[in-house]
Image (tube, rainbow, N blue to C red; front, top):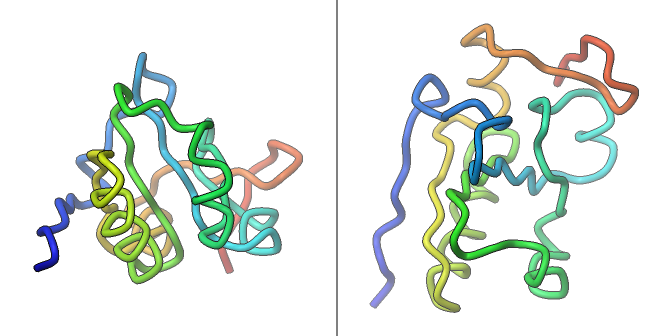
Length: 113
């Protein structure tokens, strides 16, 4: 049986600059380059198993993708290996629509579109 996935709206995600709060963006490189949450960590979905050691299980992990599908699957897998993470409902689409800051790969104002 699959464990339930904890999800919250983007408006409830703490500031990624806060201590022990990590937003993990699991989108592809081209999506990340256009726009992502400031301070987020970029680990594409396919790379999560190989890069698991980059995630501290004691951190508050918020997993985000474009609209919530990939992040949901990543969290299901993370739960099976002992991590407790939270899905960001609506992903970066909802993040941007909520007026939260989005930066591009150069750190300038970005857009996911």
